[in-house]
Length: 336
Image (cartoon, rainbow, N blue to C red; front, side, top):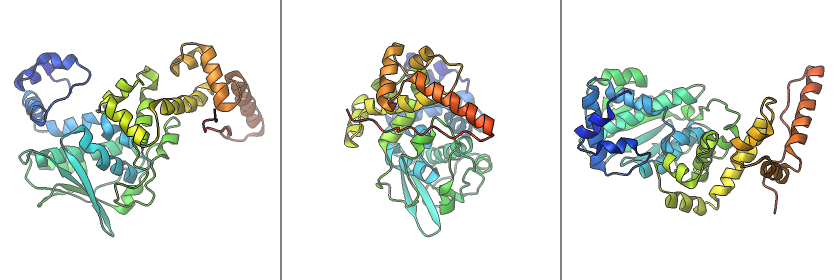
């Protein structure tokens, strides 16, 4: 948002050197002081709304990767409900009846609770707009306390804001079926979190921490930042918590890294302009030989043989005027 970070930290009575650290932890008081200081430095009435919108472009936290790991909007909400409290002092819970699904926001500071809820709901609506084909529109937003410049937020949310005894956002059950924009490299991950039943049971199998981690690895693969410390920073958690949660689900970080590499390898090899050296480097291998050995274990063939078969298939389909069908490869890990 092009704000003076040094001035913000000074106004919040925090060390200006913190702006040069990738990941830090702090208490609720520091968080709210940062928000107040940033709003003061910005000085514009729509600061909160612009902050919420800007945060949808930041690949950080369970909230971001929840949208990139889930099969549909209902699944994304389940992931947010389950893990939101890990990454902020605010928590989410949900209720459902025959017509509506409602998300409820709670925070530790009554004086900031409605502000925090409104920013979360604004982020939620914007996140749908940038990741979904047909964004699900909320029916209504309710707040416990008035917040300045409510008309700005109503325009952004696309619904009215009522003052009641709770902070919530309500959707129809049909809205939960909204699906994300198709991305070849993410498509296989989205099926890992299944919310087809669209019920409000947040303990339902499918709200997988492994799915979040896998989506995070995919997004970070091109930069090579896929070590446990990198993924922990991206998900706003600690390496120990990350590994413990994966172990609870019977998965290791290495398993997920290999899954991503295996799936990404096919996508890269289908691009004729990319050399085997480039593919190996983008997958995080130090040399081509190691990559070739891994690929042979995964698929029972070499990268060169796969590329030749793919090119021959394309040529044959071009001659017959058929659309290309994806290669039928077994993407499950081979025993041993």
